[in-house]
Length: 569
Image (cartoon, rainbow, N blue to C red; front, side, top):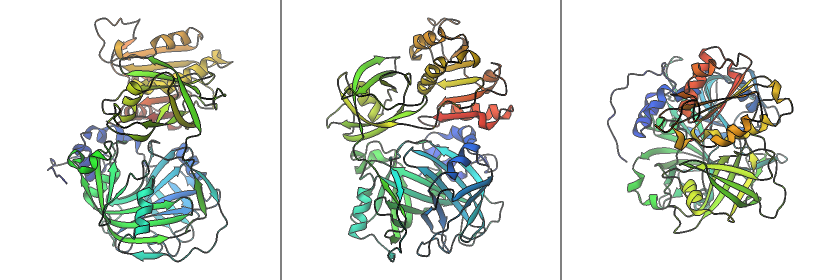
């Protein structure tokens, strides 16, 4: 593990949602700028969408500390509606940890907890941190932080409930046995809990910066490596760059892990200590998982194995159900290429809503152009018309991207790709009224599908639409002709294209409309009015600055929806 001395931090917890450990992790990873921008995604209350999401979940993941301050992760389940949100700052759960749970006696009034709401079937997840205000058979939680996470690395599963029965006794040990090691080595999903500024005695009072985070980790089966001595080595992939978990571990190396046996309802709960390997390129594990940006190494201190602890069961189809053939491949810009996909057997494709994504599973052969072989899963927004007979995904080539490089360089017309049915909640709002579609870079892809959909609406002339796109210059400007053709079909669509660095050959008023970057002020100047819906897609920092600016100017948060991609910085 390498260690760097960081300059003194002047930003306080009250000025940013990130504490010093998270900010230090962001600096080590080279994304320090998100502390002052993308952090605006983190709210002190639940938006309406989050409240509705939690209310329909059959389970929630919880992280907290036991009487010794050791983090554990557990899963609380209940009947339909067992989670309620009386108001935007209160979440109630009609469930509590069972008697054999290591957190059974720890969830009391005043306890800090982190919650993760996750819907595996649709790959949605939202996180929430707060304080228990009332405990017992029902829990009442005061919300301190609430934010969403992207769907990347979530393995899709459908749930069902079985008749409850008395669970076998839990086994408690200080190390993993061979069966537990095998379960971990085969897992494609686990949950991780960590804390900052917390202790068994909860010193520091209400005003102190402290809390727990519950988070999800996913990958291909076997992505968690179990060493001979029982140490767990966990790859940390590219994500939202908030570094909540790793930032916590910088401040406090204690960590909790939960591996769920999705077929039997068993829970394998682990607590231990972690250290961060910031230089994976020097590690022998780099050859086994080149996508790892860094590694978390966990030394196990205690294990609680609880067979059939849950009434929930989950099913996953190992094989993606859709078999698609590439019937077209079109270069859209110097970085983006589109792939047109049809059913390999000539059947009709499952329908999708504009804005949804397609989860593809690529079999990358050994010695391919990528530095990785085997199965790799990625999700790409569907960029074509929801009424077309084919799917279209439009992929930006990333310099170090395993999947994007393979698609660009290794996939040709006639090749086959496995995929799961379209999914995602980032879709056109059901309410009528003006619509502002805002994108940056490859964030144009779901917006293009939405533009196809609104142009095709029967009452399109009653729905004014602004299509706002930001890119660097003409060479990076994808789908220009397609957008112009769609605009020609509707008098209610207005285009605003921003070039941040136009070339001499780019013509203002023809290739682009405005030189510079999209801001909240530039969107407000469109005159869409307070009844407009704003849909945003782009890098997290771009979205955070715009959504914060819109809210600061009086736009209701429930009228702003966004989807991010790539690094938050």
